[in-house]
Structure formats: C-alpha cells, structure tokens
Length: 103
Image (cartoon, rainbow, N blue to C red; front, top):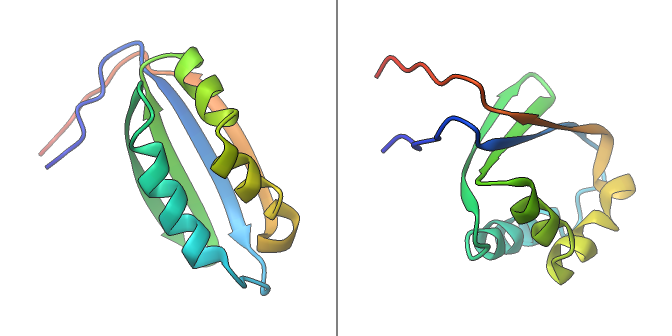
C-alpha cells in the first residue's frame, strides 16, 4: 500500500554510501526502524539504491516531529556509529509542495 503524504509534509532525505565495516549495522537499523514508527508525526519511509549509493526518504508531519526523533536516545546511539558505518552521507530536509502519483 503506498504511503499517503499530504502537501506541506516534511521530507528528510538521507543519502549515503556504506563503509566496509558494518558490524552491528543491521541490528541497529532494524531497531531504529521499529523505534521511529512509534514517533508521533512520523508518516513513513522509502529506500532506494543504485550501485553503492542509497537514499532513505522519511516523511514527517512537521519539523517538530523530526526534532523529537533527532533527540531520541536510540537514534543518538545510532548516529554515533555514522563515521564507522558510512563512507559518506548527507541529510537534506525539505517541504513537500506537490505530490503527483501514477499507481
């Protein structure tokens, strides 16, 4: 079932390349996905990849919801491993202006 994302929603795009040292990555990824779904204001996410590059796109009701997630204890622990698990990464925050679909 497709995610319904209303106009004005906030989009957090995490664009990254994984490193070769991924010890504990899968376990933490599973835990953070489970944890974020409990966060009020979280709408959903999608993940795309091409070659070694990935983009994790999460959708939020507002900036305050993202700020709450940023301060989540598990998320803080996961971010501490960023320099180990990722070769490179960037985070982009934007507001959805339009949403056209062909399903």
